[in-house]
Image 1 (cartoon, helix red, strand yellow):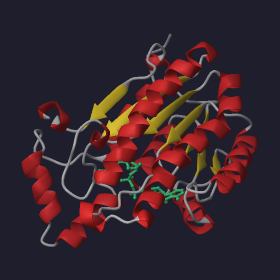
Image 2 (cartoon, rainbow, N blue to C red; image 1 turned 120 degrees about the horizontal axis):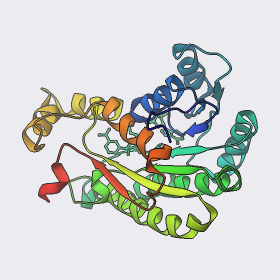
Image 3 (cartoon, rainbow, N blue to C red; image 1 turned 90 degrees about the horizontal axis):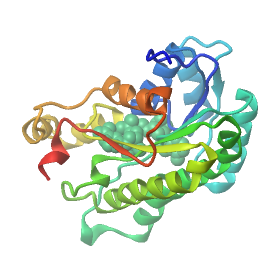
Image 4 (spheres, protein in one colour; image 1 turned 180 degrees about the vertical axis):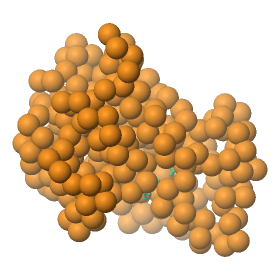
Length: 256
Ligand code: NAD
């Protein structure tokens, strides 16, 4: 077996791939030969992403709001049909809204669960027939806040990500005999629009300063560092790895 990463002829769906971690992963797969379905909430952002990535036959538009099961049931089968099957699902779409205990209302719970957990589950369910056929694999993008507690305001977010970590283990067990691997990537602080927006709200680069001080490696992560982990987990090099949690957090969770 070649240890080189090569995804030519692989068919990949990356959810939430118009920016941030998902976008970088989609670019990584595409550069290494895969055909990639790009997803984001709006057709416009998906078309813009595909144009920025150079267009061509190996990029498929798969816009749709994955917090709604009815939409998942439209978007995912259409993407799989356009790809001609599916080898890899990267379940990345997620939101990181913050709220303190006393301010958390039902709408906050509903919107966070709807995308981060329910959306992830039903996306996997819709992909399973194709993944069983190809003996493919799934990478769930959880968070270091799935394996540790974090700053105030992240209670519901952490809850969804912790649940995703254990959902991955259950799915890995349930699908092992089908030849479908399921793994978690738990990123730590990673420089994406999600964090850039939060940093702007914090004023005076307060969030970036906090991250640099808090993280054992003394810096925020770059998206290419999550891409490397996603490509590894979904490659044949990780062929005996299922149900595992790979943490890419500059050492932060090691101290907790
Ligand atoms: P981001 O906000 O920069 O990008 C999110 C992507 O998801 C975008 O492409 C957006 O269009 C898409 N998206 C949002 N809502 C959607 C919906 N309802 N349906 C379909 N797509 C939707 O976020 P990011 O920082 O790149 O985070 C990606 C994933 O990584 C998330 O699951 C997040 O929780 C996780 N994560 C991020 C960090 C970090 O520090 N950036 C750390 C740990 C985990």
